[in-house]
Amino acid sequence: MTRPSLEAHVYRAEYSSGLLEVFVGAALICVGAAWLADLVPLGAVAPGLLALLWPAVRRRWIAPRAGTVRFRPDRERRQRRSFLGLAALGAAALVLGLVAFSFSRGDGGSGDWSQLVRGFPAALIALGAAAAAALLGLPRLYGHAVVLLLGAALAVALPLEPGVVFVGTGVALAAAGSVLLARFFAASGRVGEP
Image 1: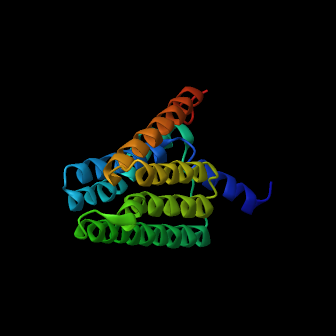
Image 2: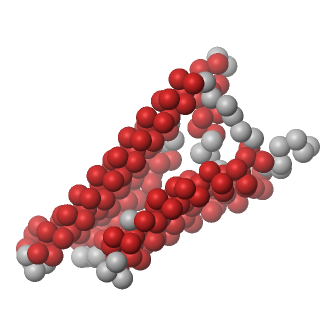
């Protein structure tokens, strides 16, 4: 295996434990619960707080089992740019979703526009999941994007509040992440142990 392909393999392995899905699922549950409680701006805080907790949790629970890697400076720069781009995309999706949903409520919640807007926030998050799949080289994130798109379609068809979709998809992602995490812990001992 060449050094660039080895580095790409190790980079993907950084996110293979399932911790990413648990954190994203928890964030979606928090956003959805805040939306349902009519505290939408408060829900926007949860993903930021969870992003701040990520390094500490990974260092405490994942790194002792998977090890840590020091990437080349160009990989770290690319990674930083990718994460900043994903954060900007996520912020834009949140703002667009809030604006669209507020706009639909302004017309009394009637009409075709109102129905379509119910699926808009989840569809935007699905776009972010697909972008993350491409940037991180994690094909399973495309599956998560599909789950979010199905949630968006259900929000339009049934109709459901976006908060219900976020809680439902958040539970699905957190459950998938929990299964991956359980497998990760079962298959790995601490680094340096036989």
